[in-house]
Amino acid sequence: MDNHEKTAVTLRLPSTLSAYSGGKSQITLHADTVEEMFARLQHHYPQIWTCLCTEQGTIRQQVKIFVNNQLIEGSNSLETPLKPGQEVIVLTASQT
Image (cartoon, rainbow, N blue to C red; front, side, top):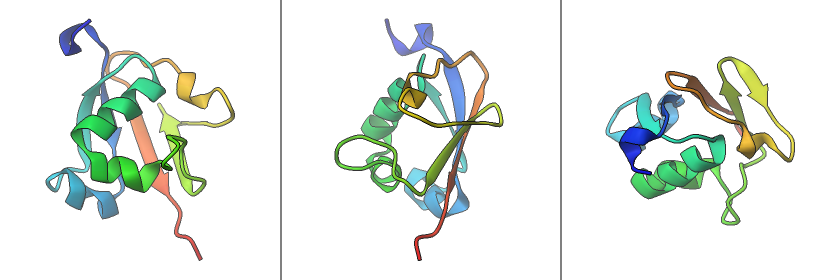
């Protein structure tokens, strides 16, 4: 299945990460699940992926992911299915 057959979703990034996406705060990725979206993010924007994920590929503790304004969390959060046109919002909390 190529990108045109996969679901197109908009990933909204914190302004602090837009420097790694050519100044864009929103990027379009083609993926059917949150996990696949992060895999595509790793391929196309590795610096953003590194800020959001650990070396083991898990979401960093200070990162919160919202799919259509609903926080996804828990062990199955990466399996969350995505629908065409959905927004995935990433928020990061500062570490103190």
